[in-house]
Image (cartoon, rainbow, N blue to C red; front, side):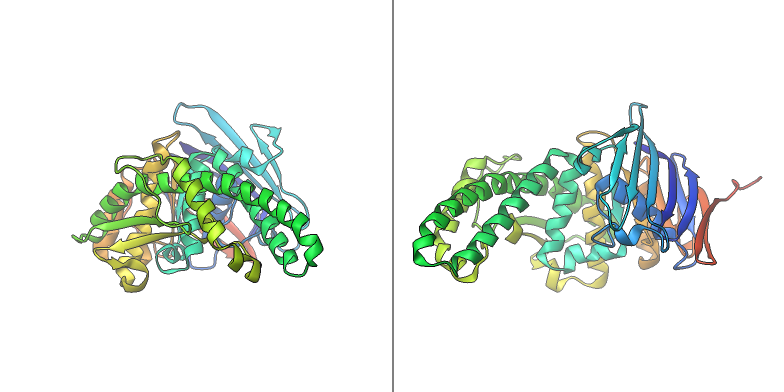
Length: 387
């Protein structure tokens, strides 16, 4: 897959910009705080439904504007032209068009453009809280199988309703608790049904990621320690066959039901659901040690980068090969790791890279100069060398 055109109107620091992009490497060059990352953020937001920097769309709209527009055109691996347009507003629902037609749900736009983004913030996948690792898995799964986004949304809805009811139960008189308890059982069933689908998909993703993550880490870090990935379920260990990539949902559902029954008293006392994918974690190990607490700065960077690059292969196994977005990565790496990352990039069809110092990026490709003047960014393609 290739991103062939990107147009922004009133997005972040851009009043208006249009870029035509070619296959291979494009390096976005300019001093810090000029607007380079804003371009990658817009691409990522359009492709995945989320910004990697902020929770909502409001901050993406340029200061003083009411609506920001992201338009892009992509070519699939089979040469089919796809278009995607988003109208963003801080006080309005985002309007999305796919191939010129309005879509009702944001999930309907997933897969039009597939991307893999690595940014400095992604080191939190290794060193941060479990929520960072859950988000990493869920964003991968939503791109791999857009139907996952719907399953995740249904789970979150059931979780909200169940938590709200658990809080209410603590203050209800005994005469009203029996009726509320029957309603709680309904939401518990929903929690288990949709939670099982989420956990099964995450387990499959972890098993698929394990080999390429280990391979990319060894290539980047040039270290012999094996990388381990293990999904830690709040419902307890899930029994499965060693060669089973797609897990059987029955043991997952049974484990969730048993754990929910065991913790029912604690849930009522605390007013929250204590079992489910919202409390699970992805355990990462380097050798025999947990990466979260024991990895060095270089190891954490290499592992976080390996996790993101491995998603390329996982996505490419099902559907179009994604576009790779690297935000200010090379500046954080030593010379050896820069060369190794550059070598890894050779296997990707299209790579967009940001850099404050052009010499930090040992890649050949098109160059785009990004500058900020009077509060507005510009992105001007540089003529090819020799002209």
